[in-house]
View 1 (cartoon, helix red, strand yellow):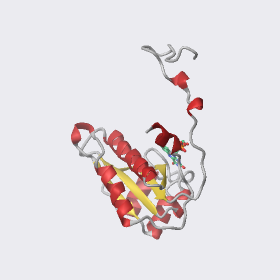
View 2 (cartoon, helix red, strand yellow):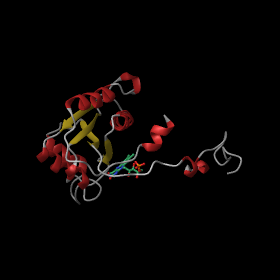
View 3 (cartoon, protein in one colour):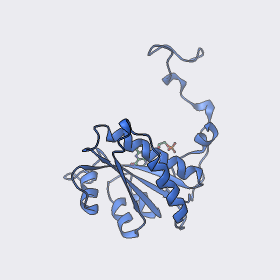
Length: 180
Ligand SMILES: Cc1cc2nc3c(=O)[nH]c(=O)nc-3n(C[C@H](O)[C@H](O)[C@H](O)COP(=O)(O)O)c2cc1C
């Protein structure tokens, strides 16, 4: 598992190759197998392959979403605030499980943050997507996960560079590792 996690990196460049139906099905299964508070499953997932809609999603934010335009697949992760007060946590867990499943199947992915982000001075990124996807008010866009076969090389994370100073022993400030 650790080696797998070292290899996982955000991927923002994709080959011009569609994601197969069976692969999408696995991503959907990973999402639906996600744990959620009180097992309420307060999420919905929109599988988007339509180029026009992907381009609209890529325009969600001024920064950090444009790379999405070249992704063959986008998964819009929605939280339903009528179902749970912790839809943010639950939908985030589902999003990362989709990313890990994508990685395990040899695809690359990247999270595009939507919640609490702006589309323009006047409109939030979430309201922009609500408009283009015609979402009811109780559905909130947490993020969009871009998925595709990666067209970039990225180094695995090194265990030597892990920041152990962020880990504490019994009390904040007491290093978990003696040498820190
Ligand atoms: C909550 C969250 C929001 C993120 N939002 C964006 C985003 O809007 N655009 C983007 O290009 N990357 C986004 N990322 C990817 C991060 O930039 C990336 O995970 C981080 O730089 C670490 O790089 P790595 O994933 O390759 O290890 C987000 C990641 C997380 C977990």
